[in-house]
Structures are given as structure tokens and as C-alpha cells.
Image (tube, rainbow, N blue to C red; front, side):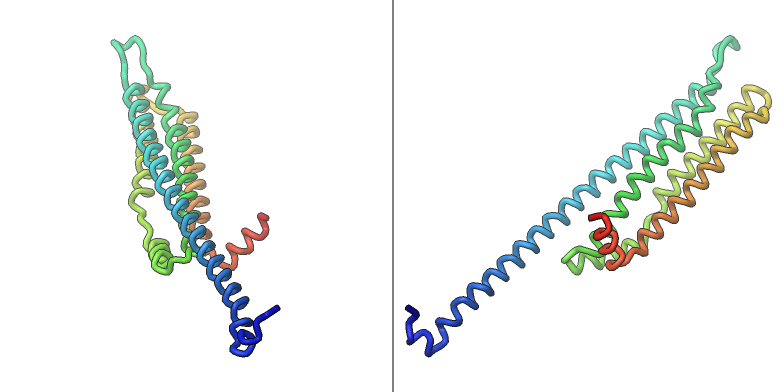
Length: 208
């Protein structure tokens, strides 16, 4: 039986309200803690993806340089490895597709952090980064691929003395396809940067 003295001074009624308030505070604290841990996992994933992208870029340079080197070899006019030069554009485009995939993953996580992070400073930083993108790495890597393809054509010409129409078709089609892929990829990144919190919520809702 409730104590009448507690009823008179309101303590009896205040006790359940205090418990409810404490539970709300606890659940809010738990949610914030879980959200912070999730954001930390996303940052870790960004770092791992950046490392993978860096390794892919190094592998691309190594493979293309090797192909160009072997393709330009000619042993006493008896044999030549110039057919390897036809692989240069394929290798370059293949690795750039992998690099673009990793780059998109990084940007996608950054957009999620910018729109969903509970840390105001972190959101401001991601918003600033989205407006001031570093284009040197991306453009430098792509320029290396294009220059490698042109170098392969020049080496082929110096070895064979001429380029056949099939050579121009091979390298030309790959270059055209490569530029189409770059344009499409850049548009995907721009659309990602323009994503709003409401649009992100709709995407998440549609996926569940």
C-alpha cells in the first residue's frame, strides 16, 4: 500500500517518472554510442579501401611498364615480343575499372557519414571535402593509362614500320570505350555528391 506521506509531497508519483526518464537517457546514450562505433567502422573501411586502391594503381603501373618493356624487345631480329603491346590498353582499362570501383566505394561511405553522422564537426568536414575534391590522383592515373596506350602505338609503329587499319581500330575502340566509361563514372560520382538526407532515407527504405 502506497505511503500517504509520499503521495502528499508528490514523491510517489515522481519515482516512476524518474525511472522512465532514466531509461530514455540510457537508450539515447546507447544509441549514440552504437552510432559512433558504426561511424568508426566506416572510417576503417575507408582507410582499407584507399589502401586497396593504392595497391591497384601500383599494380597497374607495374603491369603496363612490364608489357611496354617486353613489347619493345627484339632479340637479334629473330623474335619480338611486340604482340604484348596489344594487351597494354586492356590491362590499363581493367585496372582503372577496379580503381574506379574502390573510389566509388570511398565516396559512397563519405556521403553516408556526411548525411548520417551525429558529429556536427565531422559532417561539416565531409561537406567541405565533397566540395573540394582532390582531382590530381584520379586525373594522373587516367592520364597514365592514355599515355601508355599511345606509347604502345608508337612502339608498334617503330617495330613494324607501319600501323595497319586493324591496329587503329583496336586501340581506337578501346580509347573511345575508356572515355565513355570515364564520363559515366564521373556522372555517377556527381549524382552521389548531390544526394540529400531525404533521398538517402528513401533509398534505405526501398532496400529494406
